Image (cartoon, rainbow, N blue to C red; front, side):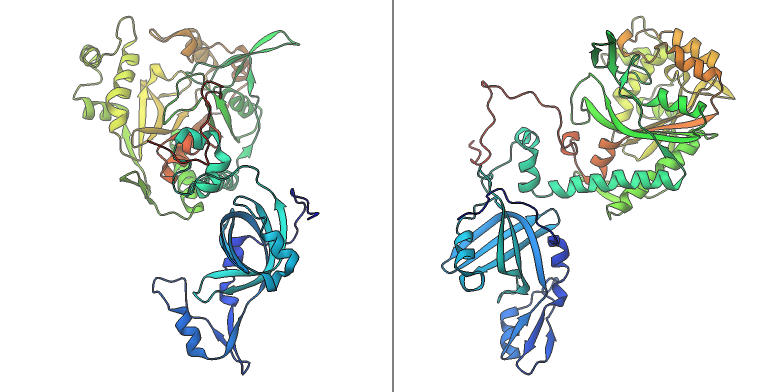
Length: 510
């Protein structure tokens, strides 16, 4: 037909969601010229539109002329008429394609349409006799041919790995997926807005580090050829942001990817998105207040209430969020006094946890993780951790055994971690030098970063620091029970000839 199957520029089109919002502009014009407003057709009470039209007598529907583009998700042939449903990222709408209205050439083009093709249309927005909002096509535009068939309508894309591997199909053909990822974008945008409103400056730190510091995690190792230098993909954002506090950036944050060479689970992906925030002259209480602002702003950004579904349960984010001490929760959920090291070790052994040659607070931390964290429904700020497991945290003035740290837990999942930051360079050096008993070298936070210590010696203001797992926050706010459902492209094993990916166009067979 002389038509480029790969299309080209298509200006001045409106999003389908915006077109649907113009439904009120459709009127019924009687022969007398009087224009009538249509009855509400999209409300809870059904309206027999065909009967309503008959009651008005002779006349016609008129509506605005619109231009739309989208992917074909449904079509049916009715002789000299074709009904085609297209969708874009804002919604779906029906096209009415009549041979008389689009002409011989246009109708011949419509006969070449396949499911998943991308097409454009110019036409009038009206209602069909049954009341369905429809664009009555006057001119068609071919924008891209799909060479592969879409998934089978009722059975395709049920395999979770297939959905993650072929996310481009998942977004198009699985209900709720595209809105979820658009909500993720809104959440991230709202976080930046909240921090900007509070006067924070966003920076971009290095992702290649010579020392894997700032967290207790095993790094990915790489090599720079020119410098003949072993490097690590960053496991945290912390130490470079603190250098900036020394440099005079008093409110600073980074929102970016970090990488940890560890396990994969519904709560863990090897690369994930972190927010780290540092505020000069604040403390961990300042960070609790900021965390609440960030979460409440994100909920408002997606138009959700404070009470949100979580599987078959509910999360109540109504402020203020609860605050409980680490040791009170330990005692409540284990029945053991946290200061009784012998009793804690006995409990740890009964849980199958390693205790030999391990620091008592490390044992306590393992028990807390095994028995307490999963029981925390929350949202709850767990505050005041044992100081010895928090080497980057300032101690309480009245109790040096306790660190000014909190973690925010929701349904057993850690969402945020924050400190009153340690800014004593001598104490920091001492803690870097002291390897806690029982922690493997590659997993320890006690890595000596001489340049960071040198920076501290130039004076880092007292500060509060906060880290938020963005993926987990999105999970909670979008009722997604796996982290892979909120990461567009989670890490998967590569395809091989021995393990081919199933054809998504074919139904799953049991």
